[in-house]
Image (tube, rainbow, N blue to C red):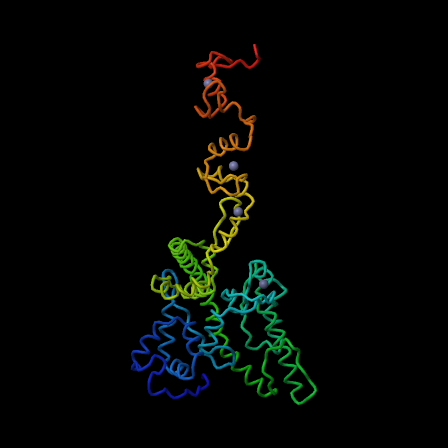
Length: 417
Ligand SMILES: [Zn+2]
Ligand SMILES: [Zn+2]
Ligand SMILES: [Zn+2]
Ligand SMILES: [Zn+2]
């Protein structure tokens, strides 16, 4: 029989949302995801009381996760043994993230092997977790011979050799062993269990009673782990669909705001929103977006723009300052990009802007520039600036046609004959 839990008294009115009648408040809470409920319960004593006294809220929260291919969250096992099986602890265990069971790195992923309570941060860690390093296995007889193995969740599997093996978490076994030693040493005040142990200290009689409860609870715990394991694959598949749709939404909003989508996605508020919506298999909506837009824009900081001349990125308000000392812009390479006009570097007083050809003419006339390198571009026999040739072939054709000199226009001889 589950141990009776003392429930707190329901508060007379629904305080959190102002003057709302209780049933309206409950209606709103019934739209929450399981993780929302846990977080709401943590915000105030009256919320917690309200949530813990309305089992139906947990029911609706579990149902709210049934989206697309994903079924509702399997219900927690209702058991008499101690352990993290309260509604809140159960939801936190599934959705709250925690350290990787192999390397202790924090991870937000769901537990990856529910029966062994394993959480993995990566595929390599999940492989190590399913090895002898973390899994205890032995024959059923050996398992039964361990006095402290009573009630430990485990699986029996038939191996190709047709032998049946019992698998459980090595940590469960080690912990249970220390727990048994600690019960034997209950009256020894000097005894300290190892720091890694996670059990409550009990006398031998208390532990024997707990063993009985544990063994009676085991089928429910094992069934729930099995249900969660099946549910996890469907949840993860739907999670991937929702996460992709939410990414598309962010990309669309980034286009509207004219910012880089990954930069937008890295703002703390949008990152939190995306994580919560993905987790609860919910799509981000325009109203969520407009609600949070001003915070997100603040977090974006000044707009970053690229200098057309040197290709480096600057804050929008710093670009004009940069342009005045951008080496590339000063060197006049701006001609190459588009038909922009430039100042003459040799006339610092003048504000006159020249095109590329205009500047060359000006420098020939005013600063004694010799047009030696590009002599073929203009014909010395024709008036200056009469025509600028685009290619050497064009100039050769011109020489041939207009001045009857140079190699023939068609098929200029390559061997010089
Ligand atoms: Zn890891
Ligand atoms: Zn620049
Ligand atoms: Zn000049
Ligand atoms: Zn000419």
